[in-house]
Image (cartoon, rainbow, N blue to C red; front, top):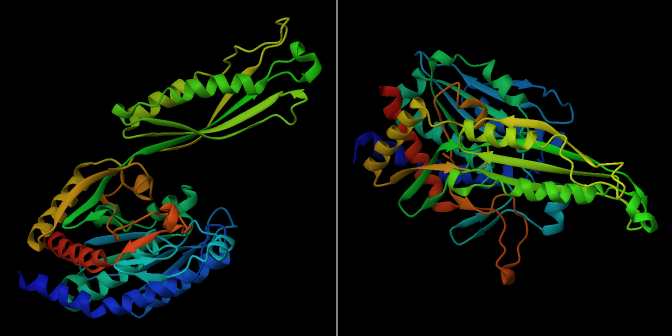
Length: 409
C-alpha cells in the first residue's frame, strides 16, 4: 500500500470516534426545512467545528425568510486550486414526526439509525473527518488547496436560491472539483458514486367545469371527470426504456357528492435523464392546454384544461469534468481494493444546479438505506433511515486518497 494511503487510513481511524460523536450531536438537533431556528442552530454547530480549523463563516439569508441561513465556510490555500464540498443543513423530519415515531440516534449492529444519518448530516460530518485526516496525513496538499464548504439551508425544498448564492461565490476557473456529499450506495467492496442525476419538471393541471345540483346531473360538466381523463393521458407518458417517468402525485376536486364538481386540479412531476427528453414530455403536457372532452348534456358548456409549468430543473450531466473525476475516484479505489462504479440516480440534489458549471461528482457520503423514513415497524418490514457504519471510514479514506491524486495533477 502507498505510504500516503496508509497515513490517510491511520488519520481517519484516529478521528473516527470523534466524528461519530459529532454526528450523534448533530443528528440530535432537529432541523426540518421550515424550522428556521433549528436549521440555524445546526449551522452554528457546524461552523464552530470548522472555525477551529481556520475556516471563516459567511451566513446568507435566503430569499424566503421562513427558511434558515445558507452557510459558506472558506479556508484559503497557498495554491491556485479550489475544492468545493457541498452539503445541506436541513432534513425532512419535523419535530412532531420525530417525537411521534420516537426516531432518535440508535446503534444496532453495523447500522446507525437516526434523522439525517444518511441524508445528509452523515455526509456533512464526513467532510470534517476528511479534512481532519488530510491536514494530518498530507499537510502540504491541505495547505495549498482552497477549501470551500457550501451548506444549503433548504435543499429538501429544492429551490434554486442556494445555487444562485453558490455560483456568485466561487471562481469557476480555479475549481477542480465540486464534491456533493450526499449518500452513495455501497455493497461490500462495490461503491456506487453518482456521476449523473435525472432532471425534473413540476407542472400544475387545472380543470374548470360547470357545477350543477346532483339532481340535475345533465346540466353539469364535471371537472373531476375531465381531470381523470387527463390523468390517464399523463401517466401513459411514462417510458421506462427512455428513462422518463410522469407521476400525478396530488389530486383534488369537488366539495360534496350532491354537486357536480366545477373545479379540479392535479400536481404532476416529470423526471428524465437528459434535457431533450425532459423538454419533450413537458411540451406534450403543455399541449393539453385547452383540452376538452367533457360537456354538459346539451353541449353548451365544456370543461377546459389549463396547464402551468411550475419548475424545471435540468439533469446533472455526465460531462467531461464529471467523467474525469469519476476516473480519479476509480483509480483511487483500485489502490484501496474498492470497485468504484458510476450510478445514475433519479433523485435530485444540489448537483443538478451546479453540475453544468463546474466538474461535479455526487454520492460521496456514507452508504445506508431508507432515506426520509422515520417509522420503525419490524413486523411489517419497515425500518427508518440508517447509515452503514462500515462505509463511513472507508468512504472517507477513498475521498481523501482521490483528492490527493486530483490535487497533485
